[in-house]
Image (cartoon, rainbow, N blue to C red; front, side, top):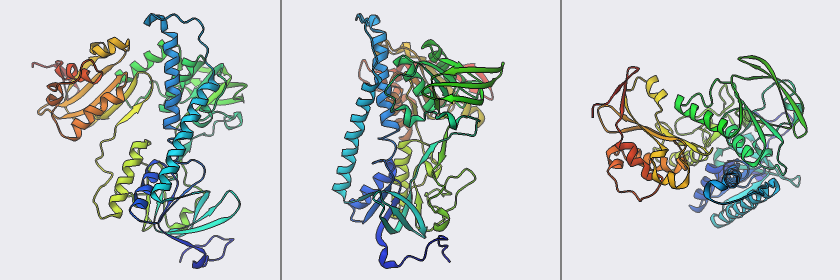
Length: 486
């Protein structure tokens, strides 16, 4: 028997609107799902609390990269004499940076609304929750309520910033990435808790705008899951740009108010330490948005971490209910959310697409960028996979020399006995763009020699793949490294 809320009576069917597909949460993948199924003639409704198109075009990927690019421009001004340009009056007005970001977001919202109109999908702005099997109630901003039922339902409610339970942290009112993107005055001293993607990207951007920045990281290295040369290169980059790094740091207590004055008590490998700053940014990971949306009434179960339980076709434990994106425990990237849509679309249209075995790229948008796809050296060693390592510094890339952007390196792992590419890493200017060429070759199962022997435009950054795959590799096997003989 379907469990009913304690304070409600069964909802008469006459009060329920019937849809082919109801989507709870308007993230990237679910938005594409809405447009696609609606364009195919289905009646589709998307329930979204606030952000048209979800977090990516509003408070995450696109606006953060917009701000990061403004910071890159600021860095060029600071380096202007290196390019033969005199500049003695650099002034960063963060309100102007924010205005540029807001203009982009407004334009994106207009494009999304136009797509809803063209496809016929209905966007319902309101707070939704399940009241039964494949049935949801939506509280609208004007106080009214709508009740919807779908033949199929997709849950795409995403995640939010983890705050943790450190004494005084919540009371200090720290910034998350959302508030950081809305700053209109430059922090005098920004303390960043967390050395992951969000923390590192914002740390570099704010430093380039002119803030003093300190990053606190629990591990002994930055991005400890990556190879040692990557972690070392990131550390060198941040130190070179004047960012203070406190490694092996555990935050014990926070006092004061972010935006005014904050004090952070740390325990480090060298003993206790106290830092003082004006602003605090929390970047300690993500928490799934699964509480308070009636999942138990829908028969949808969550795992021990609060993410929806799904199979390789993104089906939840409730028949006819699917999940897309971060809330399903998928890697936290917009491009993965869009591929999740492809998996769900396949499941609903008789296809066989699954989430297992996907080749997922990632890119950290520091400058230089860090981009990787496939195996890292750490991953290969953990799995006992022998490999040939090709590696060249970005100084070998002639286009990088013309740009005065020679920091970093390219490296690739290739099978010992065959020429299949196992993995690729770029710590380089436009590393994400360079990576795309290798990823396509990997997906097409092309040998590395196909890239090495290709005619690529000169001078371009992607052309650097030719000297990479022309380099003499080192052989790595059973923990030993030997020079290649050919």
